Amino acid sequence: MKKLIYIIPLLMLLGCTSDYIEEPIQYNQDIDIFEVQSTTIKDGDTFKIKFDNVATYKLSLTDEFTNVTYTNEKFNSVVGENILTIFTKAIPKGSFIFMVKDSDDNIIKKTKVKI
Image 1 (cartoon, one colour):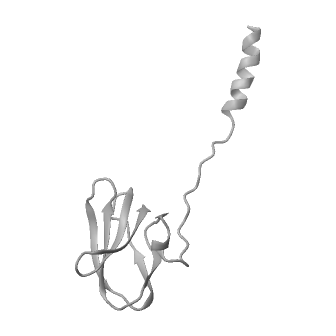
Image 2 (spheres, one colour):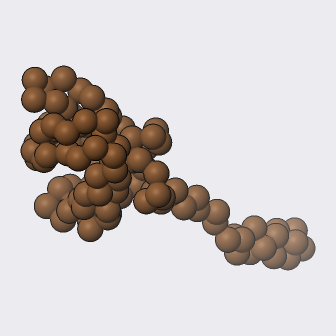
Image 3 (cartoon, one colour):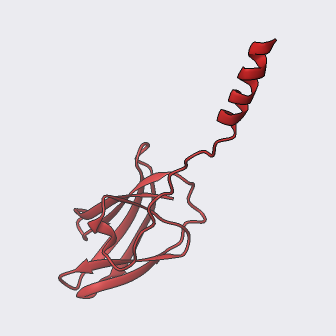
């Protein structure tokens, strides 16, 4: 019985410690989204993409594990920084590959994103 008097407070002390949860690194909007390896995005986030020429590109969001493409959005770029907004309410949460493709479907840039 005396052993329980020592064990119970020890268990309570260890059980009441706070859990350490690492916060995901949020994307800094001052840099190109493709200059980082991976980032966490949420609905309505804006991001920058830098291009050297004017052309029509396709933004593709593909599931990293199942290779299912959720969106293919075409846009016309300008030379320098292009600021775009991403809307993710209709896309399930998970890990995705975010790609920029040219008109021939060649991958120009890609990065991992988590929603």
